[in-house]
Length: 140
Image 1 (cartoon, rainbow, N blue to C red):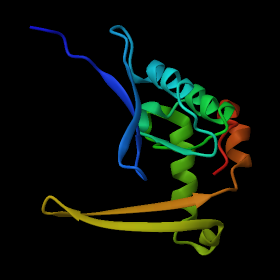
Image 2 (image 1 turned 180 degrees about the horizontal axis):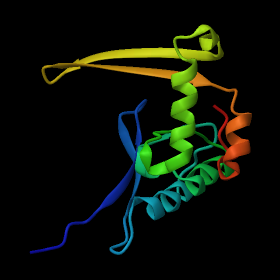
Image 3 (image 1 turned 120 degrees about the vertical axis):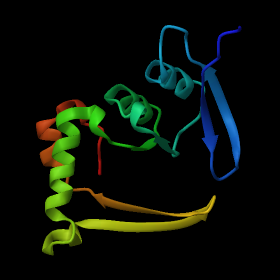
Image 4 (image 1 turned 90 degrees about the horizontal axis):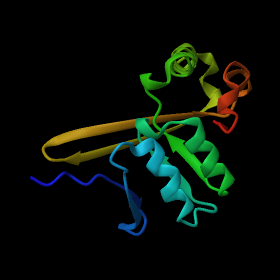
C-alpha cells in the first residue's frame, strides 16, 4: 500500500481553522518540520503552543526570531531541564512562596469525561537560564 503522509499543521484556535501545513520529510520528524512551517507564517505578536515533541531550543529561538511568543509542553524528553523545573514547581506551589505564580484553571467536559487543566506561570527564571543557557528564550 501507499505510505502515510505525515503533516505538521498550524491551527488557529481563535479562528477555528488551519493557517498552514507542511509535510514532514520521510527521514525526518516534527522537530525539523516545525521551523520550516513557522518560516511560512506571520507570527508577529502571536502565541505559539506546541506539544512536548516541539519543546526544543531551536524551535523556541525561531519563534522569538519571528517576533512571536511561545508556550511549550515540557516533559521528560528534556532531561535535567524538565527535572529542574519540576523540582522548582513542586517546592514552591502550595507553599508560602506560591504568590510568585500566576494561576489559571480550565474545566471541560467532553466525550463522557471531565478534564481539568491547571497552569502556573512564574517569571522568576534567571536561575533556570543560568543552569540551562540554551533555553535563554524562556521568560516564564
